[in-house]
Length: 288
Ligand code: NAP
Image (tube, rainbow, N blue to C red; front, top):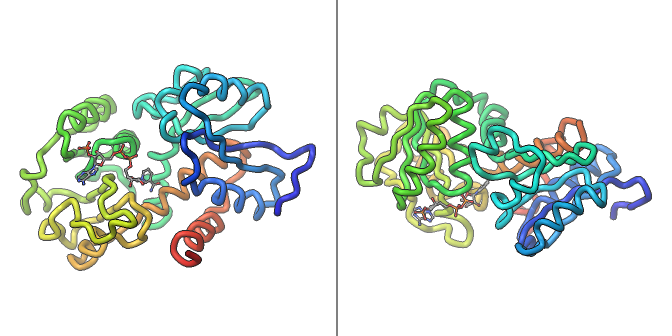
């Protein structure tokens, strides 16, 4: 158990509810490994208390917080500055207290790009992406990928109005963006695609046997197939992709890297990514 003393620095998570979060495990294992006198706590912030909670970051001299559902969008007007990518995404998941000035970032998108680079030496520059979904995670992936030099983005989502809204945001970066129906996906199109990124929760524990959101026949060996779901590590989509000879990527790396970036903002130090990965893998895949 960590010893808290008069010099312990405070970080944490604002969300409602927060009981499901892995972030305390991620950050506290990293603080402990590097011998940093920091602690990360979950704060259950009810929607009507958000303004007071944000003010408490200054009042209690908290170094910074992560922000999760339902506060990611609503927190933005309370901050002193929101960085450009977070503004385009329309959501903040990390706040940094810079001597009383609160700055908002979104580390989900950069975490996605960093994980591809770290695990697969994969660059998004010049690539053509098929993005499945148009929710919060899809926004972060789309905007960051476009900012990272993606050549073309094709979005498919059940709700095409939501997909069009996302396309408008991503197109502001200069990337070529289009929206298609699921029914329009075919072999020809798929052979013009470099990577598929599934941001839907399909296949997530406990519904691990659900049909993949994209027909397995459309997958081929020239693809990188990414699933943002990290539990299970190998989803039904990734199993189908492996069978088709594609390279696969699981969302665990993004979860770690988005935390690693927040850690770096708060402490000014590089995060121990291997320690954070092991802590999560032990918890999610081994010890339960
Ligand atoms: P969200 O805002 O609720 O968006 C979910 C998206 O998935 C929507 O576009 C929705 O389509 C689509 N969808 C849901 N069920 C579907 C189904 N049965 N078939 C087809 N499409 C479906 O959720 P989110 O915050 O983006 O999170 C999505 C997933 O990403 C979750 O599993 C979450 O755990 C994961 N995630 C992972 C990381 C990471 O670090 N690895 C980070 C963030 C999120 P409609 O718009 O048509 O409803």
